[in-house]
Image 1 (tube, rainbow, N blue to C red):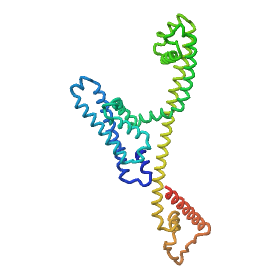
Image 2: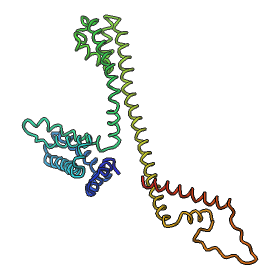
Image 3: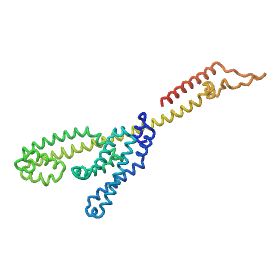
Length: 334
């Protein structure tokens, strides 16, 4: 069962028909259909940017786009009916609602700019495809760690910009004439976009100290700080993968325990009509109180059970009674 559907079913007072509708709209066939519509809609929006094609087939393309939008509206309406107030407790569903709502904005007047945001419907793939959703969730999970790296990079950039402006403002006013220009140029250098041939090499010809300065900056930013970004995101994805695996194992364990408790409960009910003595006697092969013992025949003495054998049977019966009570408690809790 889908996690959202399970959360809905766990809420008290939810009508069964709502759970059935939620199960249907979250099912694999419906999800695959929505993914196909999203991809088709993305292709259609791309075709709308092709002027020669729009000149001949504009009506057909607009009709297909409207059909895709109508499917999205129907999907969200069904989810709203099924989840009701619980719909707004999921950030992914709120995101889907906002994306579709923007697409419904009229395309004329002051709303024309917002109308162009309908391309955001493609981002619904992030909410429908589980793999993409895990990547986004891992990135969001890594944000606290990334903030620390961003702070370190900000300090490095500000320090480097002040030094570069102080040292090279006169010789390179275009790149380092003021603090803003220096920050922009250092960002270009960090991305390694023609940093040596376009900026550093001409500066080294005039000032040899520029080479070591920018080399250290590139090593610190491009090779160290940026790799910290990658490391934090990869670590976050690994942590989420481990957490999901642990959650799946816990669900499987609870399912096995629930099934086992149900089986034990059924066994306890079937054995409830029998006396513990008879159950224990059947287990050890001894006759119970309901068993008819043949009468003694003259000439063939029958050995009576001794005190040791009787105490063993009583101990086995008592142990079985305790085990049965424990199993019934487990079944009741399950």
